[in-house]
Length: 195
Image 1 (tube, rainbow, N blue to C red):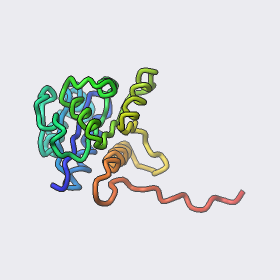
Image 2 (tube, helix red, strand yellow):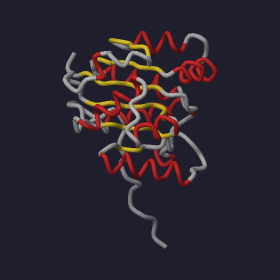
Image 3 (cartoon, rainbow, N blue to C red):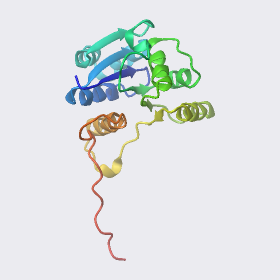
Image 4 (cartoon, rainbow, N blue to C red):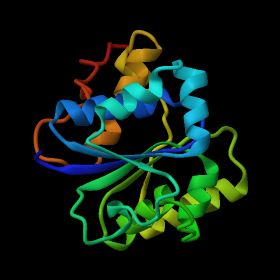
C-alpha cells in the first residue's frame, strides 16, 4: 500500500458518500482504516441496503469497532496520510470541535488535528444552526477542512450516483495524496457569448 487513510463514517444522511470515498481510495491502492459509528450502521442499511456495510468493510484494509479507543488509529504514532469523515454528523462535528475524544471515530479525528494531518469532514445537515456554524469555524481554525457535500451542478453530473461520486472524489483529492486527482476538473465554459 502506498498510503494509509482513516475513513470514519458517522450517522448523518449521505451514507453513499462513505462507499464512494472507499472506492476511490481503494482504486488508488490506499489502505483504508475504517471506523463506523453505531448510527452510521443504521443509516448505511436504510439508505444503501442491507449489504452496504459488508461492501464497505470489504473495501477496507482494517476495520475497528467504534468503541475500541485502544485501536492503532487512536495513536499519533501510527503513520496515516489523513482522515475523511463521510458523512459527518453534527454530533461528530461538535465532538471534534470540542476535543471530546469519546469514541474511536472522534479520537482518530482528534489525532489527525494534533498531528497536523489532513482531516476532511463532509458535514451533512441543512439548514444550519448557529451551533453548527460555530463548530465548523472551530474545526477549521484547528486545521480541518469542512466540505459540505454540495453538488457541482456546473459539471453536468447525470444522476445521484454521479453527484455522490464527484463529491467523494473531491474529498479524497483534498488529502493531497500522490498521483492524479480522482475528481474530474472543470474545463471552462468556453468564450462568453457576445451580447
